[in-house]
Length: 218
Image (cartoon, rainbow, N blue to C red):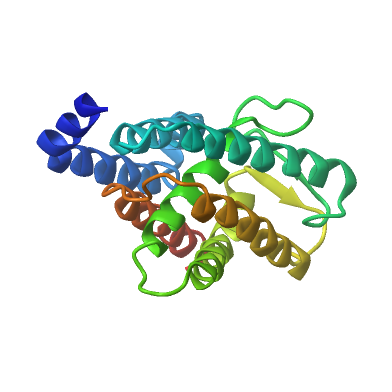
């Protein structure tokens, strides 16, 4: 994809600046009563746009990468469908309207969320000078650390609601196991794991949810 490489090289600074402004605006807009109703519908749009920009930066579009995309989207979405309808995976929870339209009681954008977070975490951990199995463990743990901030914020933003209070330990254990499966796929499939936007998007995810957490609880 020579065109994609040229675009990312030339406009990298601009892309980063726009993303930073968008995420910071989201933090502020979702906490100001006068702006909340305008910013809430933008949450799924932001996820889709973030993934689109991330994929523009991806340069190794061999069949194995398409397989990774399909498997991650499918696993991420259908594991949530199974989780919502059975309560046996993450615990008892239900999706609200904060992530947009739902199919089988789960917003399809949640599959995009799994893909975005796993791609970014996998790309960042791929830079570690350790064996592959340790990269898988590190990436799965990084996903759980992020989820620790996501969970309380997601409830306040009407992304989803937990019927078990507090969030059950089962949720984090399942997040880790599912993430480890996705990262096993990520690291074993032969395609380039380098993406210089990945670390910025992962950092922005942390900043967004930590920022929301501080606004809500402090």
